Image (tube, rainbow, N blue to C red):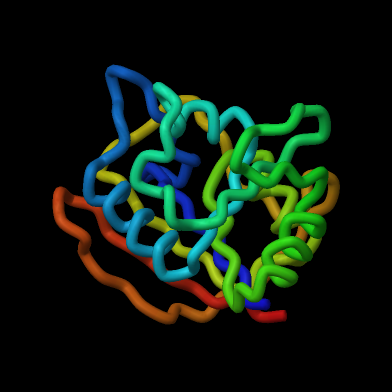
Length: 169
């Protein structure tokens, strides 16, 4: 199964965090919806899912399989709760998906990266700087270096630039 990590970064490389004063760029959200529908799924952490869900209903993702990774969340009606990145991938593979879209939460992204479970990365670089932010890490303990192959680079509009990389395995 091909795994694609999707994230929005700030121009200075931090993991972009949304606030009411700094909402996500609509171009990045539209791009996420396109990728989620193409994959037919996305994997997300519980806190990010709760933020996405807002007032409850299925929203624009009613037709995709959503997997929430949480070690202690109770059942979520209509949503698969997985306990680990590998559990999430196993579930999607059993459902017949060829691609898994890993969409959110820095902890979720870092878990997949740290376990070597990412084949490609899509970074939407937002035109802003963030003073204090989260980083994507392949290993929190040791210095590691992974080579990437640039697959595509394109403007999405609104100053957002998308970079798509393959990770050399």
